[in-house]
Structures are given as C-alpha cells and as structure tokens.
Length: 152
Image (cartoon, rainbow, N blue to C red; front, side):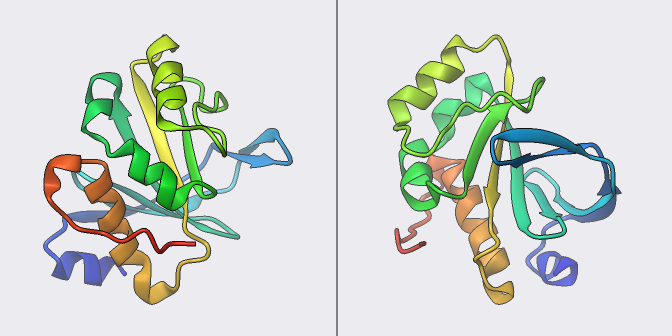
C-alpha cells in the first residue's frame, strides 16, 4: 500500500505507535501495543489495528469550515468519529448527529484541534486508497472532486 501511495506522488512514512484509545461498548481503553501507521504528508494517517483499518486526520477549529461535514456525515455516518484532540475520549460526533449539532459542539469546545477518524473495516483492500482520497477531498470542500454517496 505504501508503494501505491508513493506512485500517486504522496510522501509517506511508515512507523508504529502505541497509546491509542479504543472504544468498546462505550468504554475507552488505552492500547499499550504498537500499531503500524502509514502517515501521508499533509493529508492524514492510515492506521492498522488488530481488527480494523482506520483513516485518521487532525484539523484545527478554524479550518472546520473547509470540511464538507454534511457529506462526510451522510457517507460515513456509522464509521465516522470526531473527537477532541487533547482528550480523545470526548466524542464530538455521535451517530445520528447532524452537521449543525457537530459544529455547535466544536464551537463550544475549549479544544483548538480535533481528530477525525473513519473506520474502513468494510472497505476492500483494493479500495482503501480510493476511500482515503475521497475523505481527503471531503476535508477540503473546495477541491472540486466529485464523489458518490454509495458507501454503506
């Protein structure tokens, strides 16, 4: 995958990180084991956990307006996680929230940076990079990329 990303002229690094959090039945647990991560410069991360592949991005509060949040929610509503950066166990988005509610929570948060992750466990290996590109385009709604709402 790293090679395919490089062929698309993405600058990538491959590393391993620990101390991520995982939510199991509403409870957060710190993961002490290391997780492999492909970081795509100026884009985000592709994280490989034991049971899932997840895309992770960080964005500052003042850049939230650059996100096509409504479409992101519509396409990835069940797989989407938006959370505070400083305290990643504070969920900003919950399934069923609409754009206005999410923006309100962001505006009311003291945090200046937020994490956006999307669980891509249901995405086939051949479509991982395509979905990564789709999400990157949604994080910059001025990108003119055309995508379809056919993700389940």
